[in-house]
Image (cartoon, rainbow, N blue to C red; front, side):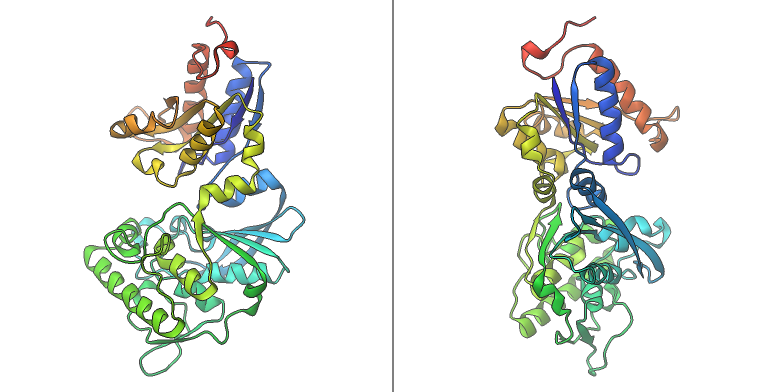
Length: 388
C-alpha cells in the first residue's frame, strides 16, 4: 500500500511536516510493508515556505525587516531548487503571530516588512517569486509593502509620508507616485497565493471580515472600510485600476488589491499553487490512499483550504481520502463527508477540558494507532487487512 500523506499545519500546535511525520510513523507501525510519501502542504499562509522546501529542496535565508508593529525583526524566506525561484510568506514579516494578543490592532500594523523581503529576494537575481498572503496582521491596503518597493505616498499638502504606513494612515494618503517602483519587478514572474477570495470592500471585504480577526473594534472597521474605499478611488484615478470586486483583492487586508493595481499580479488559490509547485499530481498517480487534514475542519475548510483541494484532486483520481484533525465542527460534518471518505478527530485536550498544544502530537499518534488497529481504512477492499 502506498500512502500519500499531505496535511496542512495544525495551527498553533504542529507544523505540516510534523503532522506528516507522526502520521507516517503510525502507518508504518500498523502496516510495516506500506510505503509512505510525505508531502506537507500549505495554502499561502504559514508553512508555505516549509512545504515548498520539503517538496522542491533549496535553502533558507533571513533578512532584517520592519515588523508589523514597526520594530526590526529577522524574517525567513527561501530560494527553491537551483535558486531562481523565491518563496516569501507575508506571515514571516507582517504576520499576526508576530503581534502580542494585547497589541493586535490593524490601525497600528504595517505590511512594510513584506515589501522589504521582496526587495531582498529581487537582489538575488530571481526569475520567479511566490508570495503567500495568509496570516497577516494588517489592513493597510498593502501600502506599507508598496512603499518599501518604491511607491511614494503623499498627504493632502503633497508632503511625502515617509514612515511605514499602517491601517491608521489610510485616510492620510491623498496622492501617490509610482516613478520609483522597483523596476526589477517587471522581469520576475510573480505568483500571489491566498487561501481566501474576498473582495476589497463591502460585507465580505478586507475590513469587515479580517479587521475583527486582527483586533479591530467596530468603529475601527468602519474607519478601515472608508480608508480602503478612498485608496481604491485613488488607484482608479492614478492607475486606471478597478479592483474592488476582484476575487482576492481583500486578501491580507487589501494587499491583494495593491499587488493587482501596482504590479498587475493575479491572486491565485494558494492550495492549488502549492500543490502544483510540489508536483502533487505525479505523487497522486502512485497512491492507494491519501491522508490530509488541518487543525480544525469546519465550513471554511470547504472554501480555499488546502485539505479540500487535496481531497478534490484525489476524488477525481479515484483515490480515497482520510482526513485527520484536532477538532471538527459538527455542523459541517455532512459537507465534510462529501469531500473525505473518513474524518478522524484527535483532540489534544487536557484534564481541564482545554486545548493543550503540547498534547497535539501524542493525541494524533494515539488516535491514528487506535483507528488503524481497527483495519477500516477507506481503501479498496484488496488492501484492507483483517482486524486483529
